[in-house]
Structure formats: C-alpha cells, structure tokens
Image 1 (spheres, rainbow, N blue to C red):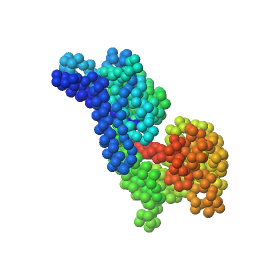
Image 2: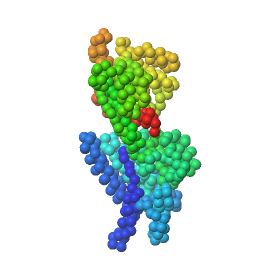
Image 3: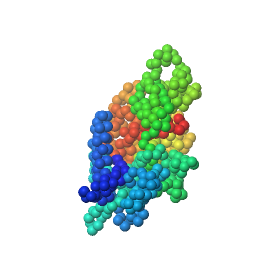
Image 4: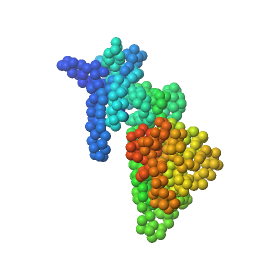
Length: 521
C-alpha cells in the first residue's frame, strides 16, 4: 500500500490555472488535487511496474484516485496551515500575498510558501475498493496528496477547496486497513529537536508517551514535522504497532564492511544478512563453504582465520560447522562476531530474534504466549535458541512435540526449569494444537529416522495441512525457519495464519537493527 504527497505539484497546477485564466477556465483547488493525484500516481505506477518486471516479480500495480471525507465546518478553514507549491524568498512571498491574497508562512527555515486549509480526514470513500485490491495481491497507490477533499451534503459527495495532509490521511487509511507498520519517508534524515538550530538533536527512538510529550512541549513545527508526528500518534493509538519516520534508505554505513563467513551452506541466513548490510549502505565480503579455503583445507585454525578476516572487515557474520564455533571466534576477534548458526544442536540466536519479532507482531504479545515447537528438536538449533529466548519472558508455556529420539536436549530443559518456565514433552501434535498461539514446525530428516530406530511413517504425524489447521485457533501463527520439505503443505500458504514467509522479511529488518547496533552509529 503506497501513498504520496503532491504539495509542490498542486501549487504549480494552481499557478498554471491562474496564469491561463484569461484564455481558459480556472480550476478549483480540489480539482487540482485530483489532477496531480492522477499525475503522480501514474508516474509511480509505471516506474514500479518497470522495476518489478526487471526483477521478474509478478505483482499487479493499480493507481486509484481517492476521495477523502472532511467536515466543511472544520476550524482549519479559518486558519490555513498546509504549505503547497514552491519555496519563495521573503520579498517574492510578500508580493504574492499582496497581489493574490495568499496566506504565507515561513516553512521550517527553508523559505516561504503559500498555505491553504487542511481539514482533518474523517473517512476514505474508496476504502472497500482498496481492501478488495489488496486481498487480490494488487499493489495499490492511493490517497495521493491526502486524497481529494470532499464532504457529504444531502447524501451527495461534494468537492471542498482544501488540501488534506497526506500523513494524516495515510494514517487514517493504514488504521482502517489494519496495517501494522506505517512508514513516513521524509526529506530530512530523521526527527529532530530544534531543527536546523545550533542545538539540533536527533530523536532516534521514542515511545508513544515520549513523542506525545515532545509534541505538547512544542518541539515540532506546524505545517512541517508536527502533522507527521500527529499522524504517527493517531496510527499507534488506533492499533498500529510501529512507525518509522525518517529519510528513505540510509548511507550511514557506506564506509563499513561486513564479512559473511559461512563454513556450512546457507541461502536464507546469508542472503538475509547481506541484504541487511546493503540496505544500510555498507559493503559485503562473502563466502560459502569457507572450510574449502586453501588455508582451511591446509589446516588453518578457525582462530587464525578470524584474526586475518578481522583486518578486512568491521563485523564478521559467522556460521560454523561445530558447536561453540562462534564463541571460539569471539574470544580472539578484534571486531564484533555475529553467530549465524553453529553446528548441529548448537545455537542460532539471530533466527530466534526474528522469530520472536514475528510472534510479537502476529500475536501482539510475548508475555503468556503458548508455543508448540515441533520436529527434530535434538539437532535443531533454531528451536533451541527460540526456547532459550522465550524463557526470558513471563508466563510463557512451551510444548515440545517430537518423537522420543528427537526430543529437546536436557540442557534447554534445565535452563527452563531454573527460570520457572512451564513446559511439557509430547509426541501428539493434534492433542496440543487447540490450545497454542504458535506452531513452530521444523524438519525431521528421513535419514535420521532410521538411524534412531524410528519408522519413516513418523514424519506424517507432524505434517501440517488444511485438515490439521482446523484444530488451530484462528488467531494463531504457523511458523517455520525454512526450507521446508515434508512439514507444511503448500495449501497452507494462503491461510492468514501462515507466517513463515513473513519471518524471512522480518529477518532482514532484525538483522539491519543488529548490524546497526554492533557497528555503533
């Protein structure tokens, strides 16, 4: 779901209308909003279609000219605040005010602009159409420039001469669509106290209570950052989970290098970390099968390899084939080491972090969550790390579902017991499903079944399909670290409870945050 602004374009359209008024009809403000909404939507639509085609992504894109309901008696009509059009010098702005009767303000120390009424958005006329498009997998561009302001008079939709703030309208649309993350891309790097003053200070992170206090203290300017902050607060108060308000993208880490050092094959974890680093603006040195290096094959120790690679990079992401490999590396490294998985039955802490984030976003809490961990729990480093991390929260209940020879190891059970975490060991998945919030499925490798005296048919007892889903509560999540083989039917993919592809997307975000943390900016 994409929205956009149109302030400069509306101002330009009004200038064209005024300049040509002696030869053709002039245009009211709401019509200028409609024209520029269609214009920018068309440009965004064709650009996005080209990008998706180049990346071989099959996703339809639709631009929708959108009407937004306002109250024509809104007090905003008595006090115009919304900047439109270009920036002017003080002298040029004064002439416009005298000649055309414009309302003028100084806009965030960048110059002077015309301001027009900006009433509060109350409803989206095309909301149901947008919902239908999103449910069909269509990328929708809508509510451009805050939408065309209209009022309902005697059952009819009537245009109103005003400009609705795009951030407030986008917040309303996001809330009514049930969207969880609201991203406001701005011209400035991020939100600041005392913007463009000698005591300017960045606000990197804040709770809703903190940002509300900053707003009440007058730290944000009307017609600039203030409506964005108000839109963010409205979104969070109406069920949203997260607002990102900053310049789109970042080059803060352009001078940083991440070494991706994998002693075992990996696609998802390695690509996830590398994507995260590139999105931060950094560079990547990458290798898979590091144990085939000539130096390693010749007998070089992990410790020596780490000492050498540490001279080439600023952070090392390490997957090692032995349990404890990451700890050995960190003991000798001069730069941060991130454990991307170590050995069979070891740990995979960054997977656990993204799993926890996915649970929080899906269930809306971690406290008191009930999780069924299913599959090869003996060798699965993802479930071991997730169980460890969940054990740090209150009232969590863990159901370990596996054949006896694949059950979770005693060290994790001892840890959970020490921290008073409720758990049970089970082998019957169907028995547990009706009472859990999350089913976390993992592979049981067929070759391990015969080695451990289990029958191959055992795998079918843990297979999740549409019939099994009938036992699962409607609010629950189905998760899997991927790749899947015989654990989850592809028919489950379309179920709203399926969260395994969301996990991969969340993984990039979590790893971006982790890299930013260890790189220290």
